[in-house]
Length: 138
Image 1 (cartoon, rainbow, N blue to C red):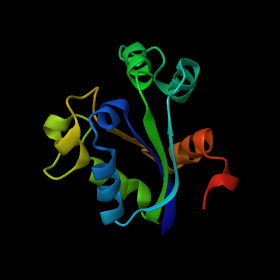
Image 2: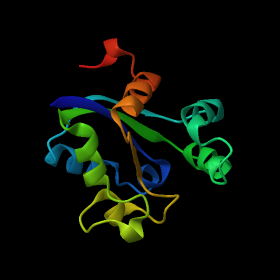
Image 3: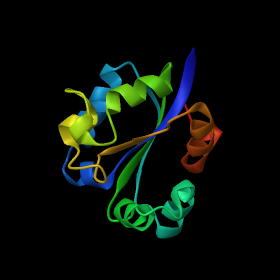
Image 4: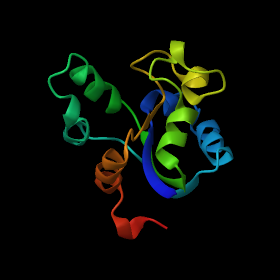
C-alpha cells in the first residue's frame, strides 16, 4: 500500500554535510520526496513537536539538540513507507543499527542519531501537517 511518512534530517547530520547522502539513500530506497524544507526549529516548535516525550529524562536535551542548527524536514511516499523508512534509518542506537543504514553510517550516538522518522501511521498523520500543509505536498 502506498503511504506517506515524515522524516527529519537532524542538526548533527546537516552540520556534518551528510544531508545529500541521506537524501540519496532515501531515493535509492524508493522514496518519492513530496516535500522538503530546510529550517531552524524554534524552541516552542521543538517542544510542541516532541511533546510526547515531555517528562522523560531526555526531553530537555532533545529540544536543545533539535534547535541548535538547521534541520531538513521531509514528506516522503512509497509502498509501506513507514516500515521501510524505519529499516533504512536503522536502530535508534547506532551501535545496534544494521550495516548500511543511515544511523550506522552517520549517527554519533543514541541522542545524535542523524534522522527522525514517523514510527506509525497515526504518528505520520500528526507529524506531516506539523510542517507540511496538505496543499504544499506535490
